[in-house]
Image 1 (cartoon, helix red, strand yellow):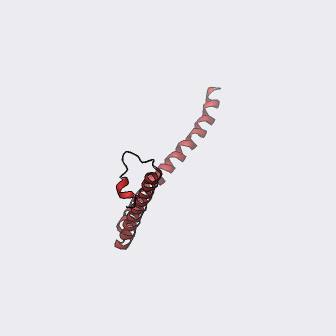
Image 2 (cartoon, helix red, strand yellow):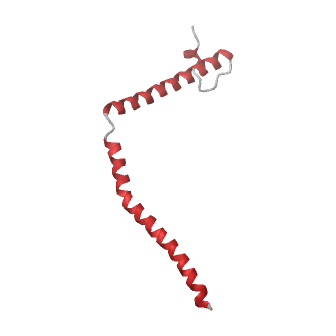
Image 3 (cartoon, helix red, strand yellow):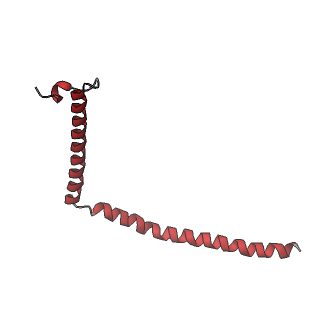
Length: 93
């Protein structure tokens, strides 16, 4: 009686093991391809692309500094300056 119960269970479980082994084998085979393609992408970034990225970062920083300066000037004009605000530079003479 026990043999009849264990036989179907063994067959069902062996399918899970085979599926897991097959998936692992596929992952192991495709890993070098994924790593190589990531390396190629990093190497093929041109100087102009790096320059564009740096330019975007600088423009973003400049916009942020301008926004902060406008907020400081607005606070100084309204008389709500923070202790860190330099109102002599923000207000016109």
